[in-house]
Length: 97
Image (cartoon, rainbow, N blue to C red; front, side, top):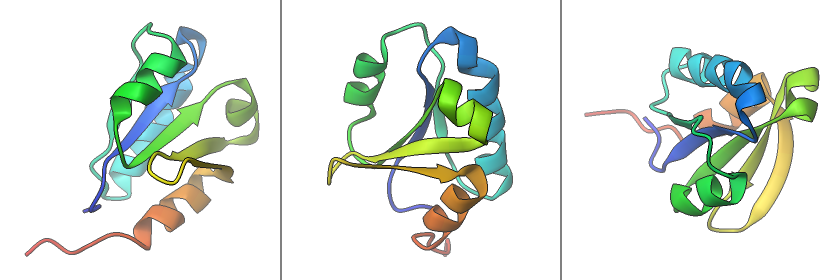
């Protein structure tokens, strides 16, 4: 379980299938992750994510098998492979009691 919110979001409907795949990979890794594949603009999706991390996927990410991770509190952005993103989030994982 993560002590913060993670939301996978697509930049457009064209990348919803990839967003669903990334979401599934993260869920399979044991994380509770939200997904936003609505038809709203990316800016609105990011704004509504409020805290935690946004995992953004689009053309570049799909082609590379990666996600762009935006730390909503530090306003830091970096791109990682999906597996590296899972490893990154696993560092913060806490055990449920």
